[in-house]
Length: 324
Image (cartoon, rainbow, N blue to C red; front, side, top):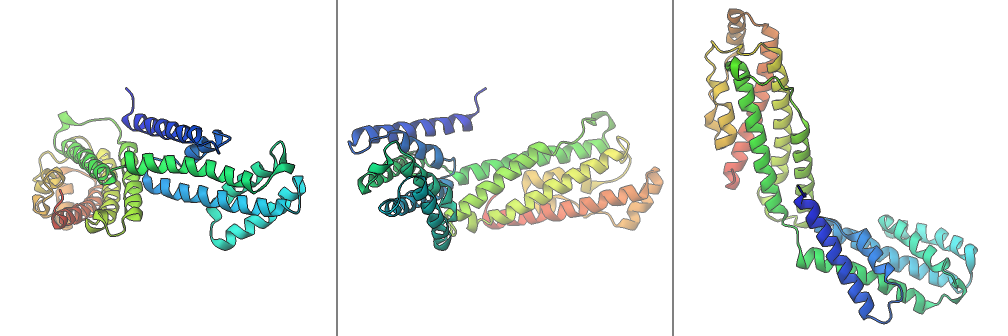
């Protein structure tokens, strides 16, 4: 089955490359179509925040490298002129705070001095190569920002719902493991799916906050919610690993309303869904009565306390922002 994300990325690259090629062929001053296509390959990305940053990097590096190379070429030619240009270009970019454009600037200088007829290099040639690059950058910005923008908030909410379903299923599995021996799943817990979703969520939230510092992501406290999801994922995995150290159905004969209501907290996002946790002295007596290791049950309770506090914080944040 074709991945929709990869399909969308391929279509965006293809559309930007086609637009850049059409612009290059339609303008007679563009001599090499390869330069606009190279700019498309270097600037296109799934996030328009990264597209804008890469476009600025490409433009600043191209203009600076062209100006430095053109000035040095009026005095020096060949490999010696290229060496002097690079010695001037790198400190200049660092001085201006454009270190991210260093690779592009070096590439442009090399292209200008290493052409077949470098002795014929003039300002018209420099302007032409700069125009080539700007056409590719313009095509990328048109496709990525105007024609096919990325709706990050919709993707953030989708990842939030996916995490909610994943953690809810994990908590239900823990409850079945401890309460229903016949329904216990012996497969070892895997952190990979949840970790991938959380990393994707963190990247999208960071991009959205950089793109719109005062936008919906900031008002709805998505940075704090993403950090809470990281804690919930970690503590739920630890809780699952500790639960697997106990025999299946270890708490089948015990009254554990806090355990029965644990998955409901994420489904309903209601902090009152989980009953008060049992006091620890009572937990030790319960472990002795059931023939379970008290230290293991106390360790499980410690992770449970941390998990429930994080779940309560997430529920409170959701109710405050009018979100699930």
